[in-house]
Image (tube, rainbow, N blue to C red; front, side, top):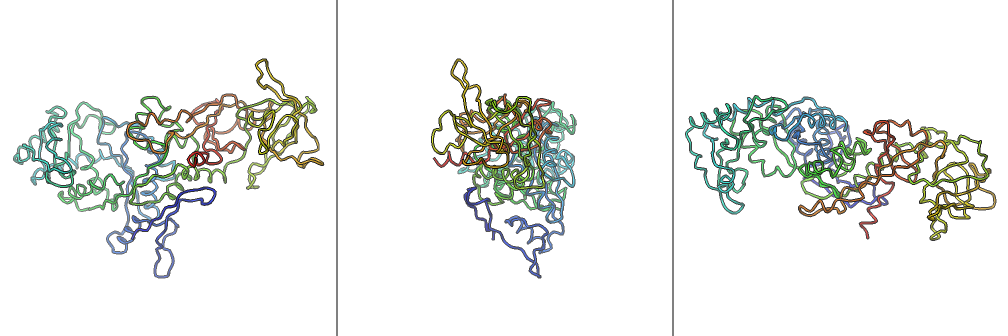
Length: 584
């Protein structure tokens, strides 16, 4: 029995989207697995297969098509397939489903390899479906010889008409009863390149009246001439279909459990039909699980390709994209994505996962690991009138308030500093405003208490500078006789480094765009660029990809594609600001 329960997610009360687990024990009452992974129905099936002696070693595979970059949904499958192989001391292959050279590129092959390794996994064997083209062809010959496959010359339009509907059975192709010898001859000539694209296909002979449309004589091979395949070059002009290639590839590799998302559930009878009708000993078992549906983003590879092609985003690794490359560039960690996959669990039921679950996973990871730094995103200059102009000092600040082992750093302080414009108002709007106001005091983080004495404006009436005074007796202690509640961050104007800050947010405005109108749902504020930020001088030496918490602002990482230019991408805000929007 598969017992899975899901709760709504709220950071203030519950830190996890959890799943009820089925404990597994051996005779001694101890968990025989070394890990403490949540149980799910797939692992229960594997446990039963091992206990029955059906398998001695578990073999899985991750079989992406190299026609784009992997996204967060693929991460769920990677975490599942490689995780099972790891936990059961089996093996997991990486296999590229490269049967459509019209859409596949070597760039995508290499990107997929990088993504799998970055997530913390490695494959036992690397394969391409094209490795098996000769064997696949031989098995097709076998099906023809058994009278289970035939060459069909119906046009695509006629084939659709003959196929029938969900409520009406299909009709047999007029080519269905061709003699075996004629089918063999035509199929061999198809391979030799004698026929034009679309003129002929090889179809399985199953049942045109089947209630499962996938069994109504599906196409096994089609002609694709004049293409250069990234692995086989121009050796082939005849390419197998996925539904034919997939089960045979699994069997050749000795896969025991072929784990697919739910859209392949109706294809399982065809998977089994192929294996049961060719002379291959291995019989992998296909098991389906729910795919990942994530709010506020797009999970269709076709639409992601469109986003890139139409320049809605800056490439496959744009930090707004749900691709693994985009998440990596934005500043997500492999551990946070694996944790996210564990939290959402493996079920049979399709559901929509809140974006807050993914964002919480990276917040928790970076809260524990990211060193703290100060960055002023919208700088407002302050001159400390009673601080000597020639004087400078180095103040100590902890790198992490909860982890003393991360040590402290020195921050330069001088007469001229900058604070964020949002931390000053001439008149406090309400009693909750605890930052700097005219005539009021505030503490600078790990520094002194200052008071705003004068506001300097330009000819247009815009504030350009604050003249403040500092209390030299308040370093590391409270001022005598008065209470200062507010604390704001700052950076030395003389020593700080100029940086560009990219405030990334959710790709879509709505949780679930409807139909084909997704372009209207693109969030115009998914990227806000601040070009004049000032950050601590030490951040100028940050390595690409290094992550930090900018105090009071959020989690950021140095962009890995900006060269020598100092650019920081916002990974996630400190709190889920969208939860409040959704509640309203």
